[in-house]
Image (cartoon, rainbow, N blue to C red; front, side, top):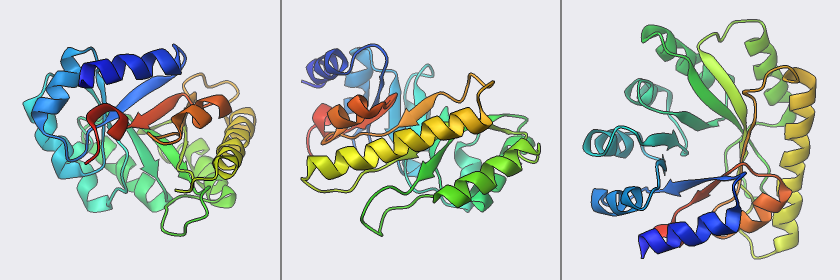
Length: 219
């Protein structure tokens, strides 16, 4: 079923959007089934779980860290992560940069923007986003590659609200790209949309969707 689910979602999302299989709490066997069906992009939200799975699975897998990241855990994923989606403070980015310096690696990151109505969600506001980018532009974060923005919509049934939140993020992405990254092709990712709302996110301009239960089943 996992393989069939992946095939179905890939047909739905089209060729311009990449599917991240959110594999948190799933056993290695389930990930291997997805991998054998052609899925090479996985998302984890716990550092320890990502490291264990990285060591157990094929090395051509692209690992994305999508959860809330603590500064003291960065060193464990710095050598192996393909993209960190959840940078929500300058301090966190400075620590990622420091770990990148130690291992002589430039680490790709997305800046997480707060767009939801729930205060439990993490993310930067527009002013904090500008401060971080200005700092990066000064050359103070040389081991960071700025790849784009990420956001999580409110966990509600109101599709109009979800659409509005994703649209706000897309507008902010476009403005940020035009102001700071117009000549930087690698700033090209907008990570938004999960199992319940990825179709809305894609219409709004998402390039990466993070899908778990629609691939692996409910936890």
